[in-house]
Image 1 (cartoon, rainbow, N blue to C red):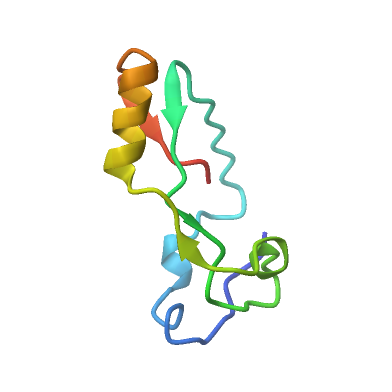
Image 2 (image 1 turned 135 degrees about the vertical axis):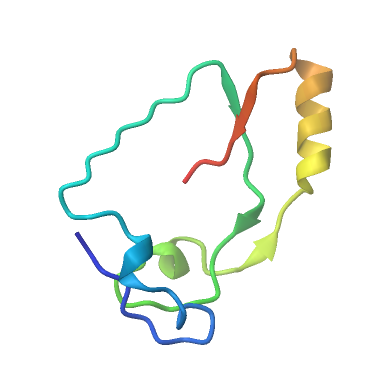
Length: 85
């Protein structure tokens, strides 16, 4: 498992304690849920991270409230709203 090594101002306070242990194998598959994406890209340039290459422009997308309203207008309300990690 990769460990976070970036020392930028945004990541400096992240400690190993927030990462799951290497033998942690939590698998989660959402059922009956909608997905929302709030931002695109990332401002950090950690050596292990592909996000700056895949999405070089950082920015906010549609507000969550607007996304939920659009979902409710198009579909029925679901129990959970998940962010695709």
